[in-house]
Amino acid sequence: MPNKVKFNICNVYYAPIVISVDRSVTFGLPVAMPGAVSIALDPNGEPESFYADGVEYYIINNNMGYSGDLELAMIPESFRTEILKEEADDNYVLVENANAETGSFALLFEFDGDVKKIRHVLYNCSASRPKIESKTNEESREVQTETVTIQARPMANGYVKAKTGDKTNSSVYADWYKAVYLPTAITEAAEVEG
Image (cartoon, rainbow, N blue to C red; front, side, top):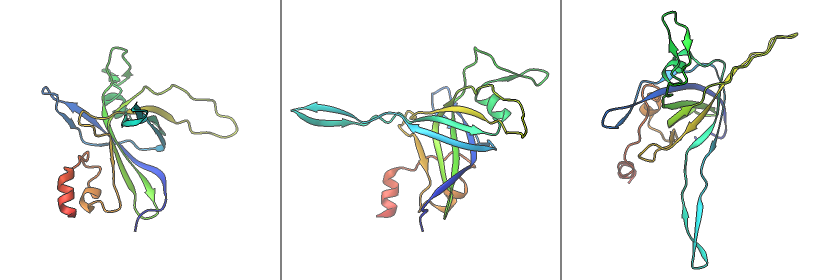
């Protein structure tokens, strides 16, 4: 039975992208980012029309991924050092260096559903530095969250994202957070179904 609704983001992980000397891409092990509050990613790129012979002759696909915000209770120190490239000095103080290049990563997360959680992966993400903000306590305390802006772009092979479906293999579903899922060839899937 398929999900009818989705709600509640949870189980957010990141997996650093490792680029080898020959430019091949692999992913590190997923690392938990506890305290997910919200995620809102808008699609980037709209189909563009090419006109010829007085009609819309061809529609150009322009999928440039997604961009938006990931809000967490607090950004984990591991994300700050591995992805945002803040450096811990000898006293374990995190230092932000303007000359450091931030890292790329896959972002994994899930939404609760009325039947089964829907698991997602965005393959090629970058993140902005979060704002530094807080405010004074008044009559009651209000938790201050941290937000990073995420840019999810297509990988060189064109993959942008993947998500589990109603018929996802149970072992793939169970192992979602053990390693970044990479699609099997579409032809193999068609042979299994046919």
